Length: 259
Image 1 (cartoon, rainbow, N blue to C red):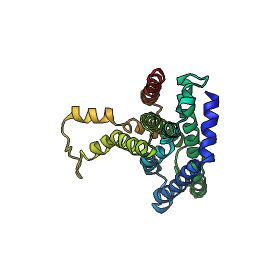
Image 2: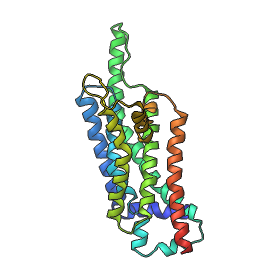
Image 3: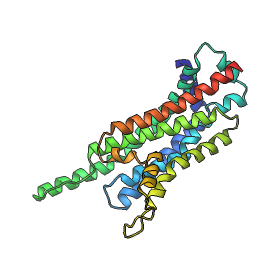
Image 4: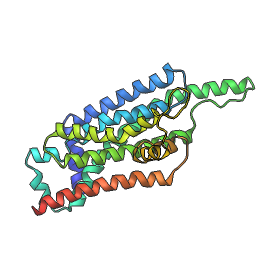
C-alpha cells in the first residue's frame, strides 16, 4: 500500500494536476474568505465553510478523476493487478494519496484565519480597555468543529470520485459523473431550505418528506459540527459512507482481477 501511496503522491506533482488543484483551491478559498468576512464585515464563518463545501463539488472530482481512469487509459492497470499488493491496499493507497493532497490544501487555507483572528484580538482588547464586555471573533471550538466537518465531507466526496474513476477509462467522464453524484447528495439540502418561504411557512408540508431529505443529504449532519457539537452519529455516518465507496471500489477490482 505504501508503494502505491508514494507513486500516487509523486504523480500528483509530476503532472500539473496537483499544482493546478492546490492553486485553484487556495486562491478560491482566499477570495471566498475575504468576501464572507472582511467584505461583509462579519466574524461569522458559516458562509465561508458552506461555500467551500460547494466548491468541493467541482474541485475534488478534478483531484480524483485520474485515480484509476488514467491507469486503464495508459494500460498500466494490469501492472497494478499483478503487483505484490492486495486490492484493498491498492485502493487505500490511492485514496490516502488524494486525502493527503486534500487535507494539506485545507490546512494551508487556514492561513486565511490569521488576519481575521488578529483583527478580532485587537477589537477585543480595545473593548476590554473601554471596560466593555467583549465577545468578539470566531470561537476556536467552532473553527475546529467546522474543519472536522469539512474534512469528513471531503473524504466522502473523494471516495466517491475514486470509485467512479474505477468504472471508466475517461478522466472527463469520471469527473462529470462524480460531479453529478455529489450534486445529487447535496441537492436535498437546498430542497429542504426551499421548503420554507419568506415568512417561514413550510412549503414542503410533510414531516416525513423533510425527514427523508435530511437523511439523504450529506450536508444535513455537517451543521452539528459547525455549532461546536461533536456528533458521534454524524462522524459514524461520514466514515461509514466513505467505507462503503472504498468497499465498492475494492469489489470492482476484485471482479476485474478474476476476469
